[in-house]
Image (cartoon, rainbow, N blue to C red; front, top):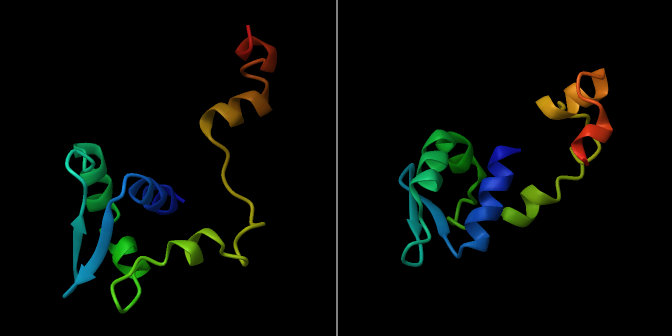
Length: 95
């Protein structure tokens, strides 16, 4: 899921990402590639490399429309878990 969000963020910022000889390469508008994005790319490098088409294009549409995975259960976030377990009353979040 993190990779999908990262790929969407890259796309929205106009950052192009491709694989070349097993390495990730990018082209970005000036100032678009923040230190945080660089860190996320590095942390997810193997998955990103696997997500690139053989011709080097990012197959974002196929990743975002994965029909087999769209209805699979996923883990709750810590705040969702706290609300569901009653640790945090739901109404206290809207006050």
